[in-house]
Image (cartoon, one colour):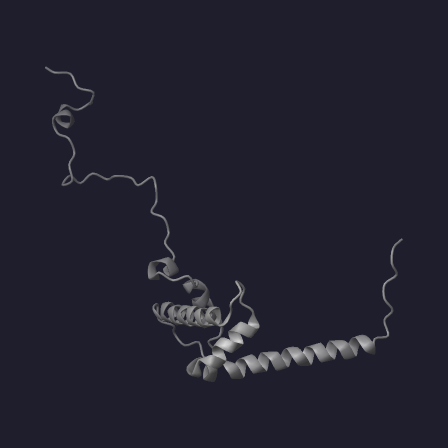
Length: 147
């Protein structure tokens, strides 16, 4: 009788194949794949979903594909604005002036973004003026310098 390394002679004669119901333990769990990478997006779908839930005043239900679609639209807009801003400059840096000029040169983006850009710039101007007024009328003395 041939000797085998198996304790049972029936196992030595039969090697397991794909049809056998052998429970193979997966010691290496499959890596988790983010929804952003599944969709091929750079913008985080999880963050968009979290923002949608926190900004949902009536607790409406949010479908599983809605944040993916919104992240894709946001990414498209960011890439489009970045491309237009890149075309308006000759340097290697893009600043707010280039972004504004890009929005002004594109009719559709101008209608969408210029009112918001103006509101942000006006708010910044107001806070700058208030901080200047506060510093002029301040009764607090500056801290003494340590020698």
